[in-house]
Length: 157
Image 1 (cartoon, helix red, strand yellow):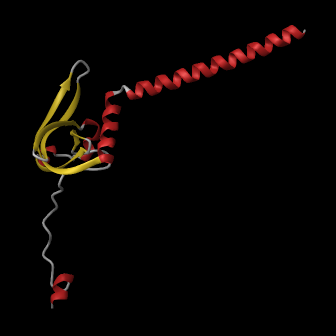
Image 2 (image 1 turned 180 degrees about the vertical axis):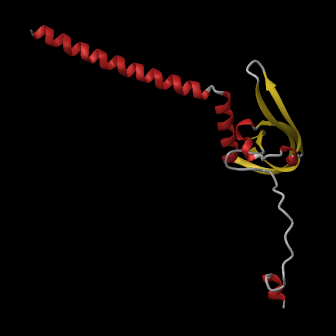
Image 3 (image 1 turned 90 degrees about the horizontal axis):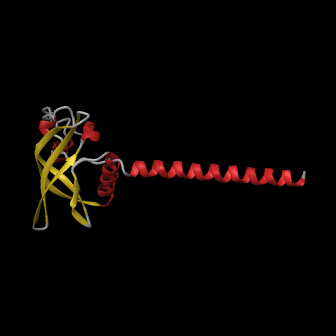
């Protein structure tokens, strides 16, 4: 009876160890899969540049929509250029997953933008991410204001 009880304890401990090992493998496989996903790597790169970046002026020169084979998924790339110090850089950013930050008519963004580049690696840059945008928003022309509604004119007398 004593031997049967010891084997039951050993079997239970073995089952617990195997269950913990399987849980650890599932966790590590999920983490590895997320880290190796190109879209996840791009999102993490954007966050890093946004957190540690400096801002300079730049220019969007082209917008390219590419159909990637074999699944036919479309990707949108913004090509831009900027200068840091006396060095000119040309870059491209995949904005497929953050296309809502660009707007309905992406042709309107070609031109001047703010570029955020990593302070330790100016080759690593972005013009838009989930929490920041370098696009200069064009606002509608302001309506004529009366003297009574303009506080600056009121102060001047």
